[in-house]
Amino acid sequence: MLTKIKKFFEPKSIFTIIKFCFASILVVLTYFTTKDVTYLSIGFLELVFLFFLYNALIQQKAIFKFIVGLLFFIFVAQMLVLYFGNSFVTLTMLKNVKFLADLGGRAITYILGTIIILFIVFLPGKSLVSNINKKILIEIILILALAEVFIHFDYKHYSPLQSFCTLVVDEVRYQHVKRAQVNPELAQETYHKDSLEDAVTKPNNLPENPNVIVIFTEGLSYNIISDERDIMPNLKEFEKSCVSFKNYYNHTFPTLRGVQGQLYSGYKLDDDKTGNNLISVQDVLHDKGYFTAFINVEPYNHEFNEYCANLGFDQVITDTRHVSGYNITMTDAEAYNFLFAYAKELDDSGNPFFLSAYTFGTHVSFDSPDLTYGDGSDSALNKFYNLDAQFGEFIKKFKSSGLADNTILVFTTDHSTYADQDFTSAFPDYKRSCTDVDQIPLFVYYNGIKPEEIDVKGRNSLCFAPTLLDYLDIDTENYFLGSSLFDADATTDFDTIFYDASYLITTKDGDVRYLSDLEVEEFLSQVLAYYSAVEAPR
Image (cartoon, rainbow, N blue to C red; front, side, top):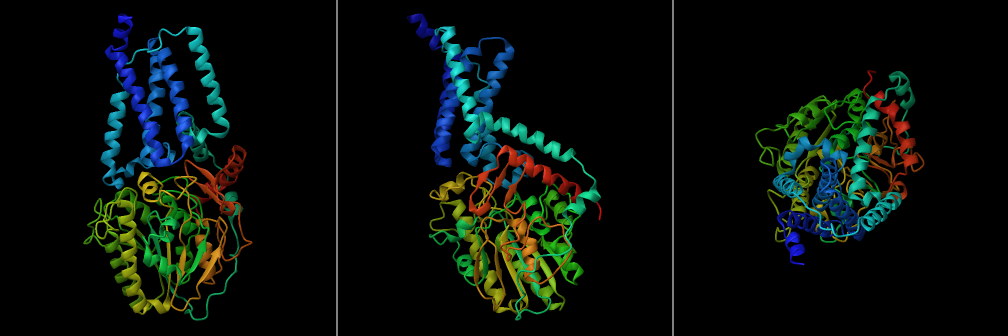
């Protein structure tokens, strides 16, 4: 008996206990982020499976030690990411590692977490179940393995191990889509349309060629604006004076896909600087005599500079004198001050303009550099409250200037707020089906507009470009995957489908659900031609 106790308290045995106690604590902690008991039940089921598999193989040949060590690492890493990010590792995350600096203070937390994981994973282990009959041990492992099979059918999105396998499948599918080529001319012909929907008439009290300002706010879900705590009171009040669109969702994630995708009404395959050779809002307005410009709030971000340069605007402009935000970027206050000053300058020239801006201050993990909400203890609430206050100052100046009489102002976002730990803590009663997909704002305003709320029943931001051009009464040939939100009957095969490197989700009728395998294959077979069309010369 004493010998058994001594073996149990050997260093390697203690290390095994530490490994699985740490993993168990992580599983419990994920509930405080996800608020979903399914992650707990599936997580512990897989942890028990790993426990018996680990103890059965850890003292076997090196290859078996490597396999169980790798499985344990995958499990713990997935759970840590779920705890911080409310999602397992996705292909989108991996493809945006180069923007790690944009995570602000959280970058240090993530790096420390990775170091802790690696330290614990590489602790040497020893079997704690060596006294169990081998036949019984094998039967236990087989039963738990069978449970893994059943998980696959309905709960694979909750499984850390199977989600990792899905990550591999996503990468294989992504590379397949990248390599798949069809005749570019045939591809462009497939998506070419001679005209746009004409579902709304431009109001008579607008000039023939009104200026257009579009504000893309970083990561803003609609629930933040409508929250009863008045986190964003200025935008909540602003919406009442606008044409606003209800049950409107983002079509992709993250920013590089979201901004370009809305301006071109199309999906983007890579999160890179590559341009889209098809037709955009800025192309159409340029041909109508508009001067087009985009405000870059990240002038020292080389990747983002190249991305902006490929958006197809006449000019990309910035203010390098006022960049006191994270990573030498413009704060929301600086961005809005510059937006108003530059808009006034363009307006004074007497020529119509299309000016678009992207504000960065509400990025995931950021806190407000200026104003705070309440006692300032919640960084998520602070940054949105600050954004709202800066917008409030901008709209006051806008309405009191001549801009309000000849300019359409559009307020929207690049994509929904990423539902990480900060988001779920700040909005504990708001449930999301996916961390990347949510309802987003789209408000259209000008002086004298008739306020209206339009329920678009789950259609998404692929509809941005055709909706804006429809409102301006501009008809043009196009390759848009979306349709005008003013036309309730103009829905397409794409304008309720969210697509990025990780997720394929439908938002039709506001019902957010993952596509079935059959639906995924059908969608991808349709969208392959679009990617060939995007990069082909016209």
